[in-house]
Amino acid sequence: MDFTVSEKAQTIVEMINEFVGKELVPLEPEFSKRPFVELLPVLQEKRRMVKQMELWAPPHPPEYGGMGLDLVEFALVSEALGGTPLGHYVFGCQAPDAGNIEILHLYGTEEQKEKYLRPLVNGDIRSCFSMTEVDMPGSNPVMLDTAAVKDGDHYVINGHKWYTSSADGARFAIVMAVTNPEAPPYLRASMFIVPTDTSGFNLVRNISIMGHEGSDWASHAEILYQSCRVPKENLLGGEGQGFVMAQERLGPGRIHHCMRWIGICNRVFALMCSRAQKRVIAPDRMLSSRQIVQAWIAECAADIQAARLMVLHAAWKMQSLGTKAARHEISMIKFFAANVLQKVLDRALQVHGGLGMSDDTLISFYYRMERAARIYDGVDEVHKVSLARRILSEYEGKTVR
Image 1 (cartoon, rainbow, N blue to C red):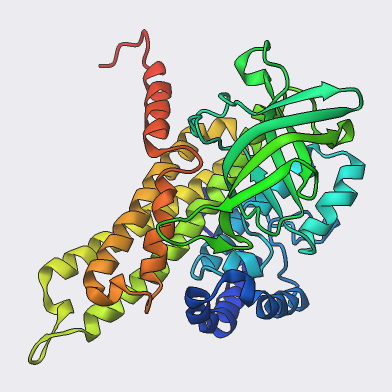
Image 2 (image 1 turned 90 degrees about the horizontal axis):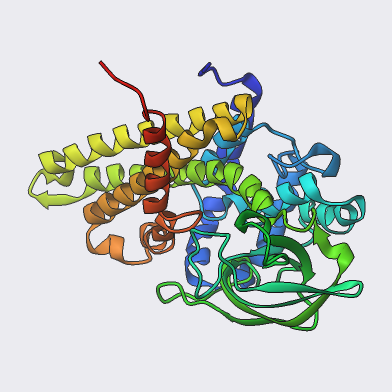
């Protein structure tokens, strides 16, 4: 792997870092105190500025208004944007829209692309992805209760979903539902585009996450699909392709998430070091003079660098050899980077003491919201078991000397 960062990528990252520092970091106190929906007018203005700078939608296809960065380039961008909770949203590459854009670009019909993909990339509308179910294991997407039954020229969807992120205010959902219950497990489900104003699409609530319900994009919804009827033209891809499309979505998505986590680590690490240098613990003595704190800082610096290089290598391998060739690396970064994130957040909070528990810094927000990093997109334990099995299979029948 060539570790040289292109001049183009360096310039883009520098421009993003400057914009984040000047335009977004000052908005964070309001973000911590007010519902997200109340910030939309000022965020729309920031989005307009990003478009003027020609930095809008970095990973998305140029023919639909994006920059078309490759996976490694966007990994570097995602790290820069991860330094603020507002970064990805303001630059038009936020989840779950980013994953939905990939699916629509790969599998959508021309009509679907014009109706849904183009306005989604342009930021005119938002979307959500409805797969996780209340009583089904989220780490096993072949197990679904939600069903879509063909009825003439329509499909009728019935099911109960939750953690449908950003459904509040979304124009449409991409819904995973069983269409072929007698087929092999990986060919049972399909995906559908369901406009959120469709009769039978019922947003029950925004789920309270450790005491915070959220609003608009910054929310996670529970949804009931009750005889929700959509035309057959809303089938995305072909019947039975739902699992394959979900895997296509999750591979690059894990790169995006992991590099965003590295960006969070960088921000929180800087806060931790600054606090250690300024926190007086005795006359003429700072917290940074304590060896235990010095050890934490050294360990966190090494862990962040290790995670960063692992993620960039995984992105490079996916880009060069394809997702299948990078399966080991994708599993590794998911649980490794998530645990580095949790460790850095915990150490930073400890160094900040009571201040870290308050919402006067971003640490408590990240601590609440990013604990889920070890759960979504497959829990750590499943990735570890899956990786170990694949590695062990390579040694079957072999003698090692």
